[in-house]
Image 1 (spheres, rainbow, N blue to C red):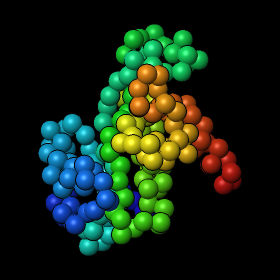
Image 2 (cartoon, helix red, strand yellow; image 1 turned 90 degrees about the horizontal axis):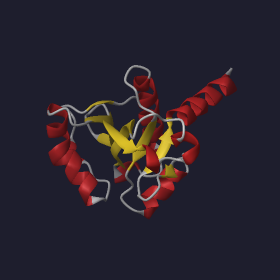
Image 3 (cartoon, rainbow, N blue to C red; image 1 turned 120 degrees about the horizontal axis):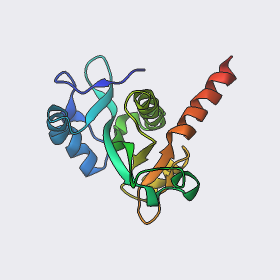
Image 4 (cartoon, rainbow, N blue to C red; image 1 turned 135 degrees about the horizontal axis):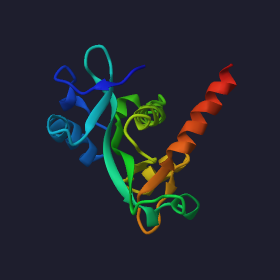
Length: 169
């Protein structure tokens, strides 16, 4: 499986995850956001262009005061660079196939790879509701202070992928 950048061959109008805001985003806004360089939409699609799932990545920043104190004490700036998974959704037709978790891992890998060239201390998400927050929590995301946003440090992400790589050797 491999994600690619959203393009005109993808069947956006047929995507349905059951969450209205995520459905309308891929159908109406995602292409415009890409053209304006606001975010990039990555899709996992069938050969015929049917979208199994998607996520967006963008640069963002968070307050040093909102991150765990153990990490915040060492940070020299009030605003810290992060990578935002702005949206993530799986089409209902592919429910139960592991697409959602696969998309999260793919997004984390991309964010980690890019953080070696463009500084980012963490990946953040803005869960739409408690069910989504529970989903991200299973990956190790933690809530930022005084917000519904969730956070995973690049150090944690790097350690997780290095551990997985060591296990395969």
